[in-house]
Length: 231
Image (cartoon, rainbow, N blue to C red; front, side):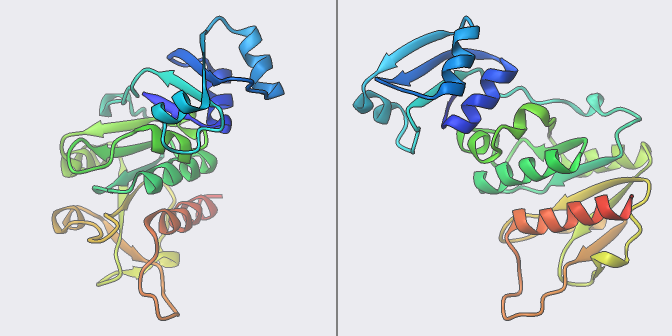
């Protein structure tokens, strides 16, 4: 998988995780990156801007890192110490996934659960949007979200879904204990079958003309409400 951009490149070089090679544009100059490369033994290739643009149509900023495909974790990797998990119900936008990963890592979320099918997976756009947070965040891939929720309940988790209809103000929920927060699809929200498996369904009140929030924005509000409530 080709990951591009200086910020994510710095995080990857610092972590040294699964890097196959580093591709630099001719006359590339960045003191921090050059210093990290000097200390490493990674294979380095030098290419022209035209060749770099061919490899990556986005703004690569003169550096592309070739890394191994992301290795997902499994439900068995959840420990008894884990107490805050985010579940994503079939998100489609890689920018949303990357932003949620970034927020989750900053807030101390223990893991993120995503379905294998009909869900955006970890790719170069997700890596870049997460701004390196993915190197410190566990993403668990499951075949069935409801089954995963049932397993979490048996481990003592309360499941909190998010929806506007037939729900309660997100500030009126007690988030003490083990919490799994479910964020729905950008257009459809959480599915009916997932909703039925939730212990609570929360809503973020809307006071303007717009009646919905971007999935990553809503996630940020909910995630930090859980964190605030647990202090």
